[in-house]
Image (cartoon, rainbow, N blue to C red):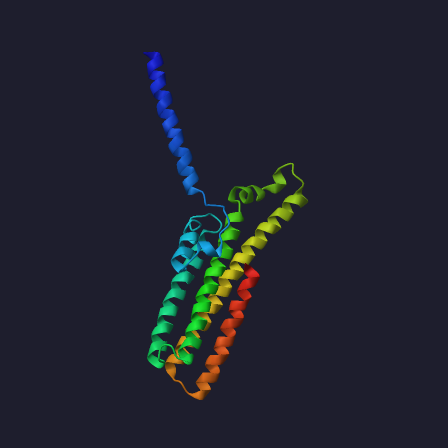
Length: 208
């Protein structure tokens, strides 16, 4: 009876261990690098960020970036509606503005890919341990260098979020200017805004 009882308990413990290990693996973020081929649109970009939204250190940044993607989608929709009212679809004017909006969306996706890869390289347990680096036997100067690397990772993610925010601001400004009128003065201003957006998009490559 004792042997049979122990066999049942052992079987139950093995089943419990199996589920606990698998649940833990599912909760841990995927650390494989993300490529642009993995991300086809804004929804997929949000899916990648979602696995980091509950993280202790990057959770808030991931949620902010996801919110930016929603706003970029809304801005793109709003701008498309304005363009259809102002210009005939397929004309050079329509294509000029619409291509800038599409490039801005693509830039935001690239930025999310860069952020996701930085987040996946971040080891939260190791970073938490380094907060008490003076209390262990590892040379402090080595661990201080490790902390600087982690801080650089943080700063790069924040800079990428700031870049997305600038792109959003300029897209909103462009939509408002196109909506207001189509005089020659406004056309010059719109061209200036387009150049600013294109410059911001060009900056994206520095964060990849």
